[in-house]
Amino acid sequence: MTAQLDMNEVGAFAEQVAGTIIGGATTAMMVLGDQLGLYAALARSGAVTSAALSEATGTSERYVREWLAQQAAVGVVEYDAAAATFLLSPVHAAVLATDDSPASMIGAAGLVTGMHRVVDRLAALFRSGQGLPWGDQDPVIFESTERFFRVGYRNSLISEWVPAVEGLAQQLEGGASVADVGCGHGAALILMAQAYPNSRFVGFDAHAPSVHVARQRAMEAGVSDRVTFEVEHCHGYPADGYDLITFFDSLHDLGDPVGAAQHAWNALGKAGRLMLVEPLAADDLATTIATIPTAALNYAASTFLCTPNSLSQPVGLALGAQAGESRLRDVLHEAGFAHIRKVAQTPFNMVLEAAPRTSP
Ligand SMILES: C[S@@+](CC[C@H](N)C(=O)[O-])C[C@H]1O[C@@H](n2cnc3c(N)ncnc32)[C@H](O)[C@@H]1O
Image (cartoon, rainbow, N blue to C red; front, side):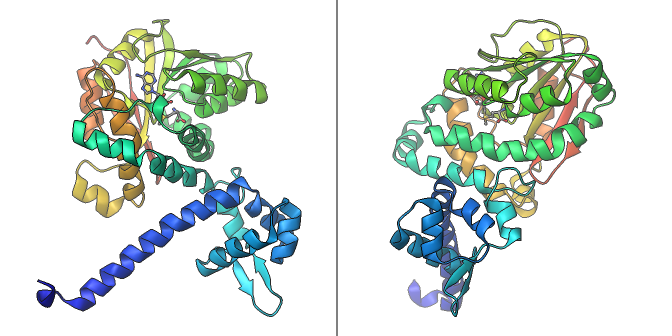
């Protein structure tokens, strides 16, 4: 069999695999750099020796030197051999050294750490077909999800997604009641509460530790007078006649997304609307893998996080993180929503609006 192989092609694919494995190793190095404040210190210092970086961060020079060597080898920092210094350029710092930049990606690195921590459990689930609840993931997943998703929400939610839903910005400015289902650490809702102080917001999530963090985040952001968070299942929150119900990257995680959308339908007021934010995907696998740059990351997250959570709950529909617009429309139609339209799209997300309310 080996004789029939084109060894040039084998070599080329081996190089591709090596690049992927180097990427995995580098992700672990990035998590270290983030945790120890090495990127933040590099962003402040400009070109720096390993001794100066270790001193600035209270870390051991020998370890820092090895870490810097790897970061130079992979092209994250520039090495100046004559001066024995390492430079994190402002461009690279914008992606790695802060959560506040619109280009920040560092929050996503911890997702990979979290995936590695459940590899053995997942292998067993592949054999049994059983699920794994979100709350049984390593806590690094909850924090990384918040950090990574918050960047996208901060970039687009108030400036693009809300204005894309006709009349919604004015409604929120005047004072509306909003519920967010599967709110996690509350990143999206807190941004809305900051932007629209006359409105009232409540986030629901089945995972109590996430709700606890969301409450802390609201206090830190100074918006706990208008945003509250409750431990509640997607079918269990009160039907309080909300003006807006949102699902931020959570509908596909649910065991019963149709039932959850039906519950939302019942919980909306007469002119209420649903805003659904989901990972960007085409309607078929071939197009998704050819056109969505983050497809490989999304399918990995779906395999480790979203699909297991859905399978751990009643119905276990397991939409997957890249269900695509048509499948999502089907879910909303089945739940009784009409006039569904895609209102916005970013490189990571698509936003659907379902309104106005009609009889199911
Ligand atoms: C991928 S996270 C998204 C969190 C948040 N919306 C965000 O954008 O950062 C999915 C969330 O859905 C929650 N969730 C999963 N199943 C749920 C259910 N049946 N009812 C309510 N929340 C659920 C999880 O606990 C988790 O916080």
